[in-house]
Image (cartoon, rainbow over all chains, first blue to last red; front, side):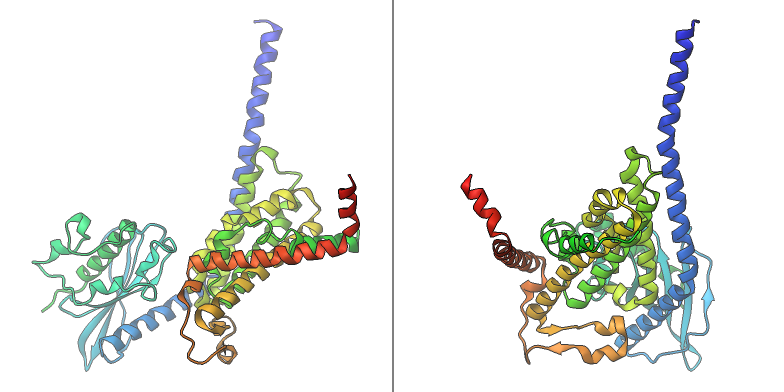
Length: 208
Length: 229
């Protein structure tokens, strides 16, 4: 163990420390950047939420107009426990003269290609779909954004489809053995949509 | 220390014309072509990109002595990504209707090479005020091109100008929409990517023609000297 050996060891330690500096810097910048974003999200959160709710109501009004239903009272909300993990679902009964005429389900899935897809589903009490409307999503522009009503009619494939004991296995995309057409190149998005709608229907109370 | 007027003039000339990022650098084609379907989209995309560029350039210039050279690009990306996410959030909160339409393209600002290029080539090496002024001018250069392209595509494709202005400026902007011609049949190609490429090509050609004429007029002596050799 001579002096040269020690010097060599020390210089290699020094080299390692030098390689750590950029790594530490990246960590620092990442922390700084995410704090900035977090502060922004906190400040803008309430406004964003209000916009999203407004969009939900607009979507509902559109769906009901299409189904020629009268706009009911949205006040009575029934929050159910999520069916699968990390899924948020709110059920709103739409009543006419006390009778539940339809259910509005506000649900979010994280199984899309990128981030959450939030959608509004309007369904009959017998679990047949009146209409589906995507409220917000971050799917790839030009590939996954076909789920928007303004861009494509794909989302109408759900209309008049019913979920009952005999049709459960149909509720998947064709690739998975179901009866729903997926979009080529956007299988993940299609699958997430079908699953989200199916789970929303499953969450409705049992039809009488 | 005040910045010399000459420097400002040079920066303005470079950003807006002689080294315009979109027309000369041909950078940032993705947002340039994808979002320029109408004038308002173009203006908003240009402005948001400019804002992101200016803020990031300021921040990078401020921190340039502390940034380790070997990881500077990832660090630029981190700063940029934070700024873009903030801009995305702000847009969603302030102009939600327009965000519905071009919101998907906002995260792509991160990949706009105008921004990364300007930060690497200029902001990283210059004092903060100069960096921010340069960014503002480069961004404006990008904005006018995307706005012009948007206006052309909207006029050719739809026969209108300033549709969707109400999504930014509220109900009062409904009246701003201009119909160039009654019963315009529409010209779909102009609204599609192919039309965007063709129109951008025409703008490029026009710009080059003007530029050639201008430089021939302002610097005839240099040309003669070159010939003598």
